[in-house]
Amino acid sequence: MKIGIVGLPQTGKTSLFNALTSSNVELGFGGGRKDPNLAQARVQDDRLDRLTEIFQPRSHIPTVVEYVDLSGLARGTARKEGFSPEFISNIKGTDAVLYVSRQFASEEVVHPEGTVDPVRDINIVLDEFLFSDLTVATGRLERLRKQVMKVKDPALLRELDLLERCLAHLEEEQPLSSLELKLEEEKTIRSFAFLTRKPMLVVINIGEEDLAAAIELERNITRQFPEHLKFVVVNARLEAEIAQLPPEDRIIFLADYGLKEAACNRVIQNSYELLGLISFFTVGEDECRAWTVTGGSPASKAAGTIHTDMERGFIRAEVVHYEDFIRAGSLAEARKQGTMKLEGRDYSVRDGDIISIRFNV
Image 1 (cartoon, rainbow, N blue to C red):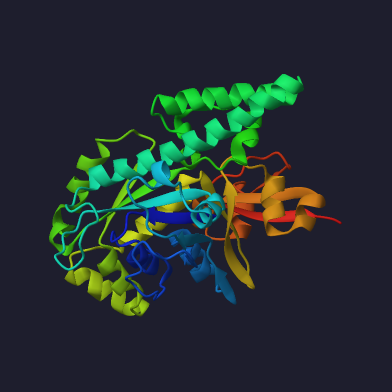
Image 2 (cartoon, rainbow, N blue to C red):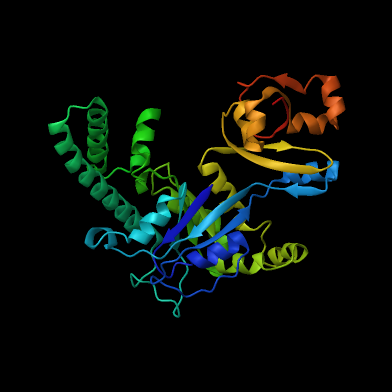
């Protein structure tokens, strides 16, 4: 699960990257950097913490999100020379986009547009992504039409029809994320890595002066955009400082600013949910661990997430939901109460399931 961090120069992208991943990457690259920063962030899950307290395992392994801090964008890039091959290559490998828009004011850090306006900046990047997709779709259609004139291949004709629909949607200035596609159609266009097809989370990077009004600010900006865009307000500089502190000092630091938890926890959790992912758990004396699958995945696929042999030799899954386990107090009591059940390979895994796989290879 990889998420690309993008935005205009001087928006605090790298500060946010440091905050999310507890990294200490040097700031001040601006728009000239080509090589991305790459690191992982742990998904905070109180349920896994509670299971670890109960089972006291030798290891505790949360699920993670991988973040890629990409070079800064600029107005007109896609329209003039197009995004660089390096940028396209890096963002193509991501599952979703985290876009950082600047709200904080600073005389030292000059905004590339001259003034601070997060709504304008979001629209700039959305337009750049849209134009990039228009260029990709138009180029592929030109080549495809020539091929279809020579060879009446049914697969090519289906792709032609699909791309014409995509192009028409983009020409109406609508992102491809709002275009309904069948599973096979989704697979067909996946190789094009359309930017407006990727799920997007927008982070509004605020200054300390806006902390008290952060929730209202988030609501006001959210109202101005379509529902498919999700927003989180963060003070990236402050969050980066918090990330460098020992865990026991973070609570005190947050309290000094009147905060209950680090805002980056919300960013990470939203990143996770952005892709429709859920967590299930395996527990025991050796290890308590959170695993990631797409919502609605069958038990056999969840087994394969743990180990391919488990999927291949799947027999049954022993399943109890986290809340039922907590009420019961133990796995043995959950079995006695009938809340722990044996499920087949097609059982649809729920977020918070505690699963033990029976298999034979």
